[in-house]
Image 1 (cartoon, rainbow, N blue to C red):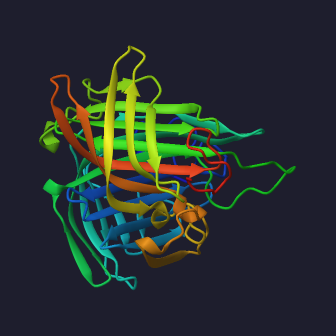
Image 2 (image 1 turned 180 degrees about the vertical axis):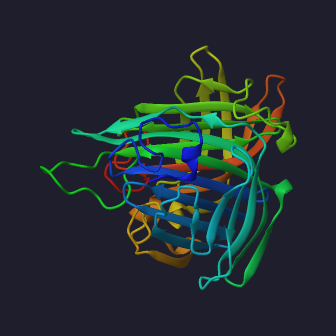
Length: 381
């Protein structure tokens, strides 16, 4: 099957680009974005993913404001043309590669609409390849890039409208691809214990002149089996960004130290400090204060019992849901994964304290020696 991409000299195999090099059914290719207001009055996330070997493409938009979370979901049979990124009323437009992206949801039965544009203020950062296996086979093998920026436009939901201002709305574009557990679990072959403790934290922060990113995976013994630490210069306007790769960007190699205080009866932080470390001996400490705005990643399909990633919903289906932020069970699987808006502080070499803005993402499933979790879904004591 030929596609528009086959007119470019970018082939990696003898096959047309429509056909994946891997036959793994869990192959995926995802767009993911977040945004939060400077005053923490709202947070929204957006996702679109193509699962080429499942023949499915799905999307979500989720917003938290005024103590409520509202989500739009869509799913369709994946189109034969990979550049087609529409699902019913939802459309993702790449205005420039590694540049501005636009997400539009036209009027539809859910009552959720938007016209939003992401404008980068940094180049892109390539995270390290993330590979994890169980006793028998690879279950995750993925690469991710991150790009910081701002958002402008509007979102309408539940009879309300939020105007999104570029000067006061921080955001991030996250593209990832490879293999991850998506769709329905594979049940063939000899029985295999598919479950292992998984702990993930991710701390992207917008500072005045640079953006920083720390992300890491740990197992039940708190061993960091994958860590990313990056620094990207900020540019005052999109045209000033030097290109896809910024020669001034840095990646550190080392472990992230952290000290978290958890809310009793949950797996969510209420206070925390983090130290990014490089093998050169360089270190940087970041402390965070939580604003109270928390986004459950269920709104973007993560661990969702109905709208989970890569689940067949039919030829085309859209839907929506909403809940009060304080009404959910924070230890239920579908609500464990979340991002909280934070105000960050760090001490510059000059001795000056700098304020930054970002999120702390947490997903803690299973026991953890340092955080004190003994079982799969117990909360902090």
